[in-house]
Amino acid sequence: MGQPTIELVGPADLARARVALVVTEAVDQGAARMVKAIERDGIPRVVMVASRFDEAGVLTTVAAGVTNFMRRSEATAARLTEVIRQADSSGCQLPEGLLKKAASVDPPVVAEAVMDTDFDAGGRRSATLTVCLSTREAEVMRLVADGYDTGDIADQLAYSESTIKGVLAKVMSRLEARNRCHAVAVAVRQGLI
Image (cartoon, rainbow, N blue to C red; front, side, top):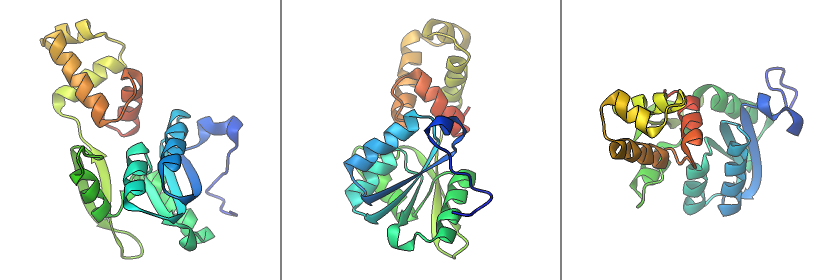
């Protein structure tokens, strides 16, 4: 790309990658599976460039972890650079209408989201997606991150083990985490704990 601030890394250097760029013909289930694989590799942000978008595909890929979208026809070197930088510095930048639609489907793709509306450099309206944790949920997740098991957490916070299990189940569902370790990783990446 000829941009000194953006370094392309190969498979051997994935630990250094902060943004993945996925170029695809259509935003669909296959693209969503690719995004989930990228997240498993530890890359926290995914920019998707596609020729065709449909509502169901966009919602599916947002749920999988896409943080930014771009039409292939708009993908000039300068615009790609701008979107990659936005993804790296700001996290999720999706159109406000998409966030509202994602929050309104049943079951919600985006649960308990906070939408802060901004205007980007081009004067277009965008929104930042942030999943929030309650004080109790954040305390539980911090203790999980510190290596405590369910019984220890229940003792420290003076709750029953079933309450702690319920809190963890809700948080894991909201963060779309596969297990406790993954939930902690997502919470840390998103600055929730």
